Length: 415
Image (cartoon, rainbow, N blue to C red; front, top):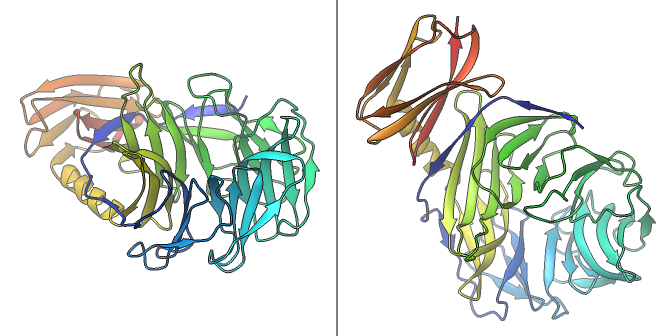
């Protein structure tokens, strides 16, 4: 089992940002649900759904055109390895391919395949598929010629059912072994020989993952973890309170979005999107937006422009976010500017001064670099408090001021 290091604690910040995500006018369509979205550029976007629905915009969502898929089957994951060449999973165990940026699509038939779990395009020629064959067994298929021919890759774990795969070259790839929330059946696996052999890189637990490149990646299991060495070690950037994040999407090393759906006995738990950020100055933060819709997929073409798809009130919906960073950064700066923490470094006492009370009640928490909480205090109706640090070991700490809706974290040095 790989080493997992705990560095920083997590505190939750809930905010109302419904104005950020704007519903798009898609016109009259037959789809009741959109399944996946892919932004080739911020303005050039493809969306797919049930009943063989394919929509395309070239003006950032102002107008959408429906494209002929040639099928009435439900459509799944999309990937474009180039601006012109793209692939879509079809529910019947086929692939759709375009050579003209999504204007027209042709079907690729796969022999003895009943369904496809996941798709990973390394480039326009090298493609991996996680499939179920006609004997109900999981198989990994590989093509070196853009889907014209396929070879079966025999892995070392015949029981593995790869729900999701992500390859970065012909040898290195990652996969989840199943999709089973609230169980210990899921694993994140890695291959370094093109899928012939897989090794487990985290403890078996339901953990959605996403890698930026072959070395840098993230996963979420009641907390947010990052690796910078291809899964050999994971650093816990923060603790989390969201129990069921279905998927995550990494924009860069500092910003990751996730889709969550809390499961309850009544089936009425919160659903929505969560934005996870990390910086050395502020530590780890989560920003949650509850939503009544079932969100299937998100895709950000850059840190400021993103799309989400799903369904609401039995209708397929598309939402666009064009100000994710601008709005949130303003809130973060406003909160940061209202708090003074001094002196820093400190050897005697640390003073926390607020320009106005965050609420009638807030918490002060000090965490060392192993993630251990060494100090916590419940503060009521005051604008200033102090912490005696003389009994703490010299070194670096993370100090967080938190209430139910806001939090601010800052690195503290005790000398």
